[in-house]
Length: 277
Image (cartoon, rainbow, N blue to C red):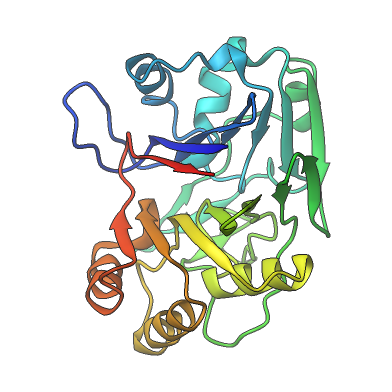
């Protein structure tokens, strides 16, 4: 059995849960506990307690990429993770910035000081890079995702320096996916590599065409007409049964996806739980 709970997301529809700009999923797979991303840090421990989740029982933590809204909870809740294996790309903990509409640079990197600092505080720190990583039990990380099409980009003005002269390709972006009887189930952090690039990479890597469900952030906040049209077209052609929209997908993109794929899309808010046999 595979159970996935949205532990942190931008919205919440229960009074006892907190919402924040960030994302975290709690996964249970045949007795194993996995945390995919950790939010900014304010909501993680509160929501875990409210949902009856003991963070100290986690076996594996995987980070989709090194932005603060996906890694912040790791530093805040670190005492819970002393025995956990932490998977993150080699570039996840580097300094990085975004240029806001006012032209000013804002730091958006991880609060984790370095991989060495993290390694001394958790059970094991494992660096991912090029190819898919097998976590065992039908659980995988994509590793780096090739940027194959010409209509998807990182979704923002991301840079590696405060002067905003060196673009950040967010090469550390990765997704998690699971093998199930109904097909593949995919978790996205922000899909800075592009949601379609990500899904096609998973299909190519596994040789399995059918994706049953996709949950998470698609970073379509600033997507233009061509990107949205192609995204809808590709998602529709893949015959994905469930598309859970979260976090950085954006209100306009969510509305369009709901309108064009009404029987498949739903808002995957804080507290949403899905079970796959």
